[in-house]
Length: 273
Image 1 (spheres, rainbow, N blue to C red):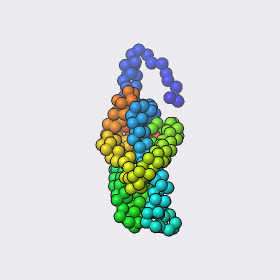
Image 2: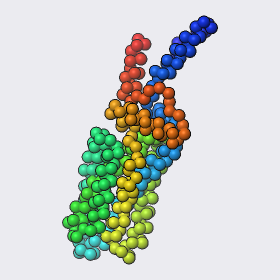
Image 3: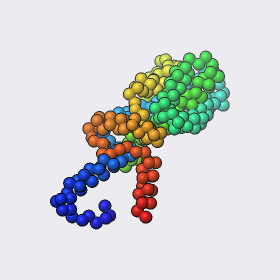
Image 4: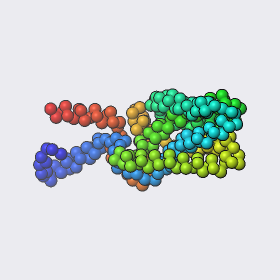
């Protein structure tokens, strides 16, 4: 407090205590402030594992192109230009998906955003294994790229549960899952390609996306997104769940969005003058 505090006499002590209690009751906090107070705990570790599986899935779907391309070229007698078009189709799909899924997640929620991307990636990736010819393979791999373009939605969802001061560190740790995915894909190709062929590799590489769908019901919506949409009651329930799992308390007061906090700050500055 900037104002000088005058000593209170015993007769007015009860009024001072009541005033402090009223101030605490009227205090507010944002999602970021709640996350900082709760810290990184068991809940965030589970979120990291789920989002990391999605990142592993993306890495495997990208890495398999270097193994499938030569095999398909030999089987179907493709030219180098035709083989490179398989990879190009994936990146074209990613270009469209990155823009589309971002808009969808902002309008309908982070959970719905990465749910749709996981469905598209898994279904298209699995159907790629049954492509009857080169043209169907191009179409399916383009759809896989469309799903892979939603990868930033999953990473954004993960970071919105991480305390702000630690986000840089945990983003680096999260990025390490990509390396895990590339190593797993190389090992899978080494085991599967000589015995079962490229179709089995495509089918097995789509399984990490299936795991995302199996555990989807356990994932909560981002409380930050809920606050931005004015659904603070739902956001508070999620924060209470995080606090319970982590074994830490929530800040006292009412949950407000960043916009409401900014408005409060502006009003307080105006009132001072």
